[in-house]
Image (tube, rainbow, N blue to C red):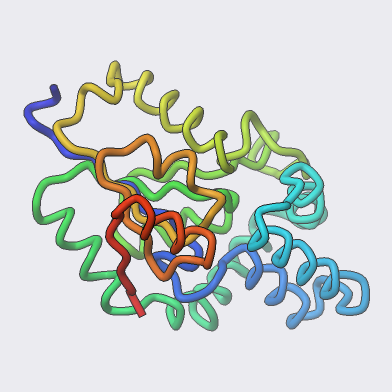
Length: 224
C-alpha cells in the first residue's frame, strides 16, 4: 500500500457542481453568439436528457461537443472559458462541495475529479477546487489546437474505470495500493465505478441511483 493512502474520487457535474458544466458550456457559447441557438439548443437539451436517462451515445455527443472547439483558436477559447468560469461556474460551486473536498485534502487523501466532461471545460474547475488530479474525456489536439476529435477512451461509464486504472498503472499503483477508496457521484451512469470502490456515496442522486443506493445500503448525501 502507498503508506496507507486513501483514494477519494469525485464526479463533477451535479455532484461537486450544482449543475452540469458540459451542458452549461454549450449554453454559454449559444448565449455569447458563438453557436447558433436554433441549431444547437434543442440538440444540447436532448443530449442532456439522454445522459440523465442513461441512454447517451457518448461518441455522438462528443462529436457535438468537441467540434466547436476545433473552429476557434485556443487563445480565444481560453478567454471565453475565463468568462464562463466567472459568469457561470463559480455560482454552481456550493460551500458544502468545497468543504467536502477540503476535508479529504486535509486528511491527506489522494483526491481525483473523474468526469465524462472534457478536460478543456473541466481542468480550470478542478483547479478552482484545489484538486491536482483530473481524469476527464480528452479532446485531441495538435500543437495545442483542438481537432474536434476525442483522444483515447472517453471517461464515461465503464470508460471511467479503464481511465482510472490506466492513471493508477502510470504511477505503479493498483486498487490494492489504497487502504480505502471512496467515490461520490449523482448519476446512474457511474454505477460501474461506484460498484468498484469500497465506499460508494450517492450525492444528490438521480432516481435510479437513489434506488440502487437504498437497496445496497450506500450512504446518500446532499451538497446543495
